[in-house]
Length: 241
Image 1 (cartoon, rainbow, N blue to C red):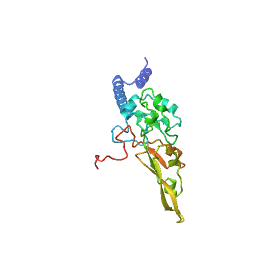
Image 2: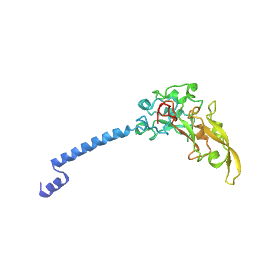
Image 3: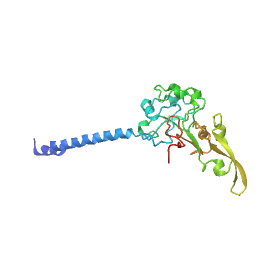
Image 4: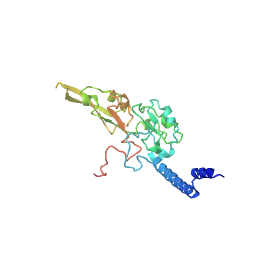
């Protein structure tokens, strides 16, 4: 081998000891990356039991979050049968571990009061089977009024759309007459919507039908969900503080 060839080989091929060090670094880096990825993908916003994502609204009949994630196979059957297209694949609402699991997006649809199709098609019972009557009593969240956007509250204009569409036998959204002044000082009587947290089941039709958009003046939160006793709107009398 001529000197030039030997120099080229030595230049492009590091000594054995250096190659070994590089290999060790690569193995260590790969191991740390794998561990980090595993921990990252297991991050769940509700893992602590004290922090709840308001956007994580699961279909009625969904099991408690840990068991739900263990059972859900991301098949998408519940999304396919939802008649209003409210059930959508999640992004980060349930952490990376919950990616592509079903959540309800009330800006796209709502949970039909007379429908229980998602509970019928779930192959693993991550969404347990419930009949329509039982489903109508399951709370998947709670509506709240954004008074800075609601027409009667913010702009002194009458609107009763949310109350009209509320499907519960006794309206969870009710109207209260109030005397307000418009910009010219004229006194007007408007009907301002209010939400009864005991009656609201979180179906989301009020958000879906609200004439105010991006975002709606009435919106849904996962708070109050039946499946999670810790995610409640009102603190119990024994909770202290």
